[in-house]
Length: 466
Image 1: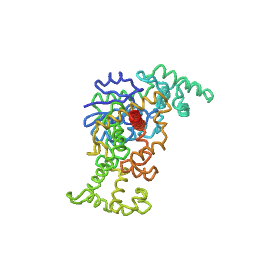
Image 2 (image 1 turned 120 degrees about the vertical axis):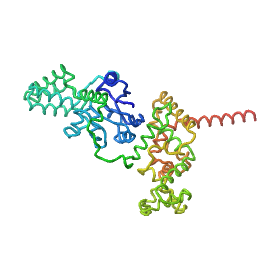
Image 3 (image 1 turned 60 degrees about the horizontal axis):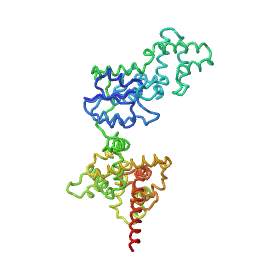
């Protein structure tokens, strides 16, 4: 069993290890981190902190995927408490007061737990979480050191400030103009927090509680009965999850961590045989939903399955068909071929898109060659941007990339033809294909330039000898 903990700044990594010896400690969780773990049966994932502003936040579907693999996922204190309150009906375990406040509707805003902080390893806090303000104010009311009527006003004052400005000195300064003795109450709470920092830090208390629960093997005792039966179905496995899985759990390329999707994208774009493999992959999945004999040709079985009423192909009007087909195809192909093209091109929008393209047998070939090309691409991108930042791949014009795709695919450079070619390769749209080719363009431009130089050099030599 492996225990993974995502923490910082609520707790430092050394502190996590002191309370939970043997844990694998990560920084605050962000999009893709849970998928990279490959956690499975018997593993535990405890989410305390997470990024949400400077990085895409951890997605709910990531949590479902990890739980579907048999791991236990728990959350507390900060991002973990927020996600647990959103996911406890699915079996994620929530621990602590912050989780309970979210779950019970006492609080509902994401910024209740948001803070600014210094970088690791010290994670020094630069602002105060709103839940901590609530907690400290409540303790002072209970102790009788501030009047109850001031509690809500102090919380509302803190809420009115952007989360990076929620600091006790700022709150004290802002309260002066509000009158009614509020300034004195804020000063009392501030002194309490400064003299008893542990007592006023609810997020830290919840985080330590969660570590103790895991360390003592008490996760199974925490009340968490899933209210929804989702594991028996696959409709939650969306196209977006499939692409995240491909991006964060695909074959690794040393030059770019987490670039498994780049390997897949490269073959989608540059492998001339990829459309045939994608078609075979799609038709195989369609055929499995039918009842035709297994000894029949794949196309025949897929077309028989496609003719079933639930597929809805009879609803394809001329206008709807035009979305998936080029004018030349509409004019020249027979009905069987048109149906195949629609099936293939609409597949990437289907919920039965493979969990990860790398799990689909036969889609990728000659991985070492592709991984080398991808690695070279990332190296060239870094070198070019290092010499001239204006040449960064983010600055490549979309029109140039579309022209490149049209050249590689041998199609006209207009949206209709490019869209059809992109969908034949499993892309949703031209925009997705443009985004996918962007990291590889400079490498291909460099190779093309070297090829031209070689040709010119040969011509010069021939002329000299002539």
